[in-house]
Length: 237
Image (cartoon, rainbow, N blue to C red):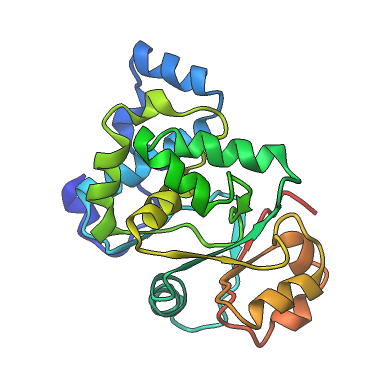
């Protein structure tokens, strides 16, 4: 497996050991109630340990790359570094008490991190009301991952619950460490179907993807926007 990973030409990494899960691990997954965030964090840890990639993108299957380039891989990497990684910001919306779900996502994600971090994280997110899920492309930087996995511990699967979201845990970690800052914008970009909302945020901050509700209705507007390279939630019209 490690020799295969040295090649830059591959379509998938199948973690065979995780297909044959032991009974105890399966019970942990069943308790969490969702395989999605468990598999993403386990996959992230596997890639961190077994490859040398500096930047790792972890997304759902319901996405489409829309890169108008002869060499999309090089373009994607440039976008990662210049717009997302180098910006050192996480863009989100303060819902100011309007969403119990968002608060639950934040508090569930905070619970995976050290308990003594909770007061500062609560302050940074306005008591869990800052929504950044689906606004920022979920990119992970290798230079932070050793510390990240140390902070969530080897038993992180046992700490996960249904609303412990992988990238939320990661950017909360980054914010606590002071590696990134939160930027509050007027609109949450998912599930908003309005191009005007997207444009207002795009004009000021780096956005690299768009939800399918907007893209499917306004494809022409995105033709000359090569920095927006991905559409997500293809399963949602």
